[in-house]
Image (cartoon, helix red, strand yellow):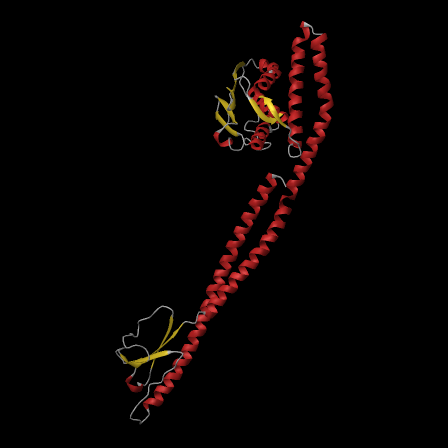
Length: 383
């Protein structure tokens, strides 16, 4: 799966799972609140039933002729009777407990006693809340949320795969098209370049110098595009042969290769190259790195601008005085097929290839740009 497909799948899963989680959390909270109230109401009904039983016992006690009256008690509940002024008379509740006072984790039920049995006007019945069914309810809801989360995660993954399937098919079709295109371009590009070199070597005439230069520039542009597309397609399958590459010689060779393109825009070329800069890198990767930086600096430079290439033991810097890149586009410009400026054409793969090479070798890549002033690209291999 390509990075773009993974990003799309992850975004879809995040949105899908977060929205599903919020919906289920809301539904579970409503269900839990309703069920908890129902459980508490059930316990209150039991308390009310016990209170009615106590009232019956108090009436019997009131009618009793015994010298010693025993207050009816219940191990499951606590109760007390209060007079008309709501003052404590007697009960299994502590005497300091007021009629209106309430404690946490306790259910209360107050009922009037009519007529006043034993001088009592109110009966207070209390019971500690039984949290066992509430805890079981919480466990059941959590278990349901866990099972639902696993189920919807699996479902979301397969839905996400279906979601990215059209994009994957489009990318595969585009990659097949690029492969077919590069295959078809190879032979005519090689033929054109070979014949241009032969004409320059054996049959060059003053009257066709300009025409030959245009053909050479166009051919080299096509050749670079072909090399980039081939590299892009084979990057993940390419077996890299790491050798000592003299970057000083390579940069000078590639600057000479692009001379005709630079002269066509009348660019002033400024080279500051430290001799014998050796890197351990695949030669093809080094070519793609240097070629794309130089060709971009030429393509996006202004007419009669400056092309500056600096090579030191620590880094390669390529500067131009061209159109520049918007600050908001800098973080996207290295993505595949992304172009900050569409006026110059191209596939938007140059900086992506540079970024890929830097990632493969853990090089630092930094782009500094100011609109209408120019761009600097720094590739640092020594940190």
